[in-house]
Length: 176
Length: 359
Image (cartoon, rainbow over the protein chains, first blue to last red):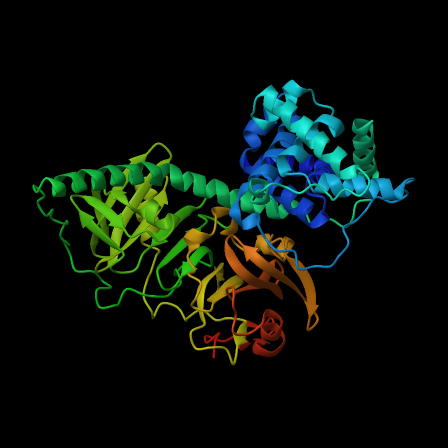
C-alpha cells in the first residue's frame, strides 16, 4: 500500500514540479523561496495523498495547497527574515520593454502576499472571483476588494516618479 | 490595460527557463512519512492529553475548594533488573536490532526514538523515553513535564496492567489506532511504546535495553574549539546503526538560545535522508562557500535568530551530516569566523569521530 502510494505520488509530482515551481515563483518572486514553497507543498501533499488522489481535479487541489501554504508561510513568524544578499532577483529574458516589465514586476513583488496571490489566481490561472474565493477560503467580496486594492497600488507605483508600493505596518508583518 | 500587462508579466515568468531545482521528491516522501507517523502518534496521544488536561483542571478545582487528597502512585511490584542503573541522560542503543531510527534526541531532557518493525516497514512502533523525574503517576495517570510532543504522547491514563517489563509492571491502553505500553525502565523513569497489539508491544519491549553500559556514547563528526564554555550540544537527531549515530543533525547553542524539540515543528524532526536529498534545510537564508563547503547562513529559522547550517558530507550513501549552530542575535563569534577558524571536521570515518564535540 505504501509502495503504491509512493509510486503514484512520485509519478504525479515528477510530472508537476515544473508548473508548481513556476506558480510558486510568481507568488514568491525568487527561486529559493519558490523551491522552498514547492518542497513544503509536496510534503503536505504526501501526507494527504489519499484525499488528493480522490479529488476531482488533482492539479487544482495541489494549486490550492500551494497558494495556502504560501499565505501560511508569510503569516508565520519564522518567515520574517532579513535578506543579507545583494543578489539581483532573476528577471525574465527577452523582454521587449525591459524597464516597464521591471517596474511592473517590482511593483508586483511589493504587494502584500494575499494581493499577490489574488492577482496570480485571477490573471495567471484565470480563475473567476468565485473560484478564487473558494480557493482562498474567503468571500467573493474580499477577492474583489483585494484585486481592486492591488491594481490601485500597482497603478500608483507605475506613475512617473512614484515609489514602489509601500505595505502598511500590518502588511509588513505579513511579508517575508 | 494594466490587467493585460500583468497577464503579460506572468506569461513571461511562465516562459522563463527554469533554474536548477532544489525540490526533492524523496525528501518530501521522507518528511511526509515522519508527519504521518506523528499523526498516528497524536491519534493515540491526543485523547490522553485531553484526559490529562481535564484531570489537571479537575485537580485545580478541588485544590481551590480545599478538598484535594493526595493520590497514591501505583507501587512497583518487582525490583527492576536495571534498578542499579541511573536513568540515563544520553541515548543508548537498542540491542538485538541492527537499525534504530532516532527521531529526536535531547540528552538534557528527553529521548524520543522511533524504529521500524522491519527494515522495510514504514510504519514503525514509536518509543518515547523520558528521564527520571520527568514523569510522575497520580491516580492512575502518567503525567510528564512539557518538553515537546513526546510529553503529550507519553502522558495519560495508564490503562490496564499488562505483564512485567524490566521488572516493573507495564500498563496497556488500547485506542482505535493502536495501543500504548508504558512501564518504568528505571526508578521514576518511564518509557512508552506504541504498537498494534499488546502481544506485539510486549515482544518488542523485551528487545529494548537501557543503560550507560549498553552502548558507547554518541560520537560527533566535528569539534568546535575556542568557543565560550557555555556553548553546548543542545539537540541532535540521527539514525542509529551499528553503534554509530549516522545522519547527524546537531544543534549547537550558545546557552542564550533555548533548544527544545518542541520549538521545531514535526516536519523538521526526521531522519536525515531528508537532508541527503536536500542537504541544506529550508532556512530561507543565503548560501556561501566557506572553506570549500556550501554553508547556509540564516538570520532566522523557526524563530531562532542567526543560524549557520552546513552539510558536512556523507558517512555512507544517504548518510549526510548536517550541523546547525544557533548563535543568537549577538554572537560572541561571527558565523563566518566560527566556520572558518573554530570548526574542525573529522571526515567520513566514524572511527575518527569524537565524543567531545565542544572544547
